[in-house]
Image (cartoon, rainbow, N blue to C red; front, side, top):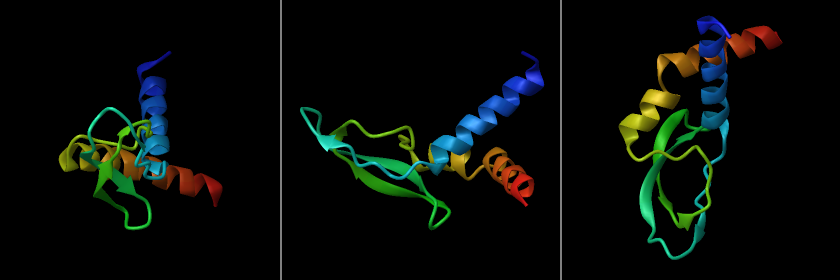
Length: 87
């Protein structure tokens, strides 16, 4: 696979994980913690209380990590390309 195809695949995966709804997980033996997720409605990263187990990949350890991945240029470019394609 070429470098270009690898980059396109990575952008597609990023767009998919940032599009996931926020999943608070479920209570378990792990204590609840503050995590950060991309909220599609507000188009920004938000803090939420993760219950300890389960959840999905739209869950970051810091606001900066969430912003870098989901609010970053690469994610916006991927979304724009996808929208242009659908029009």
